[in-house]
View (cartoon, rainbow, N blue to C red):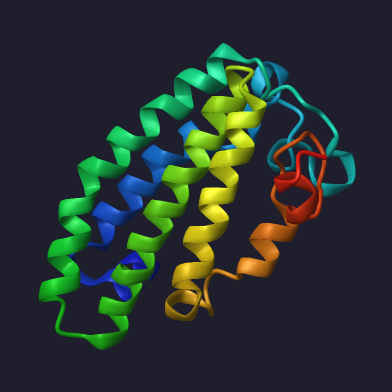
Length: 169
């Protein structure tokens, strides 16, 4: 709680609750068969990076479909704090959280589409995410690295270079 209060001020506890509500919807463990076997549970030495259980998975689709409503319910709190926070560092945390919200929105739709078996649509949505990140990169460059997100995005069941993914490889 000290971290959230320090980073976000008076509404820090709300941020924590918001993120805790988002985590079960987007947690990597939710995209594995049985919700187990992820780095969170097994440790880095035991994870299975090539597992594809998020594809054609109605549970993942259902969870991902809940994300936009969760994000939208918290946007007024974010916007109000961007306008009203007198501390510049805390205000910047709120601005970064707004970017995080939009990135999560794209991420959820990519996962939802893939979970429904619409891989080409997921690839197209990934291209939209890449464009969004590129368009705003100078505004959030330090906390969110476009290169890292683009290069390591897991869209086709294994880590691929973003240019291979966007070409449909």
